[in-house]
Image (cartoon, rainbow, N blue to C red; front, top):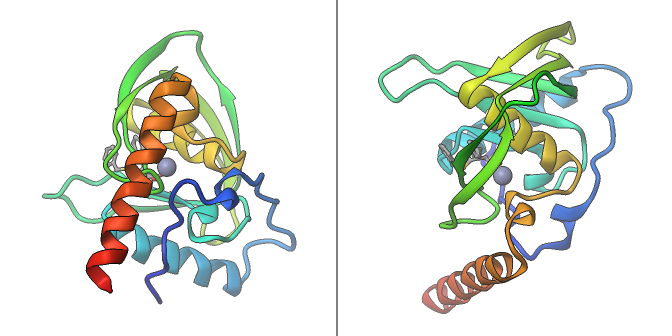
Length: 175
Ligand code: K2U
Ligand code: ZN
């Protein structure tokens, strides 16, 4: 397993539409998900899409366990999502690819998801609460959409400028 670099805005690769995994959940795809999970835990985060480590494949990992709970890793290969309700609710989102930026995004409160799990088995379930928020956030990544794309142009530009400024400061400190 390996901790991989996480792409941050304005990296253009984050806008790519990820491609479906062909040929099922192989050992290679499992190794990718193992790296994604290790990278997510180290960030730390509770979800991660493969494009965030530069791999344009429709793969997501997640762990919604609380700090005082046992880890509960989740794996989603070629996930499909169907909104289940017209009810929406706001949630203060963040993103490992837009570090230190948080803002409210309104999303459906429930959705039905269908995917292949770590062993390649097809699973269909209903996501609610934080699971619904996180899976929709990650599914957006597979379409090249970031949560800041739902904000105003001014807020989005300020977010990108903040990340670029922080990256420049980090590079200066490392020099
Ligand atoms: O895509 C990512 O960067 C992973 C996000 C997942 C996430 C975004 C919005 C709402 C819930 C989850 C990161 O885990 S951001 C860090 C974080 C952690 C807990 C709650 C919200 C955000
Ligand atoms: Zn994100």
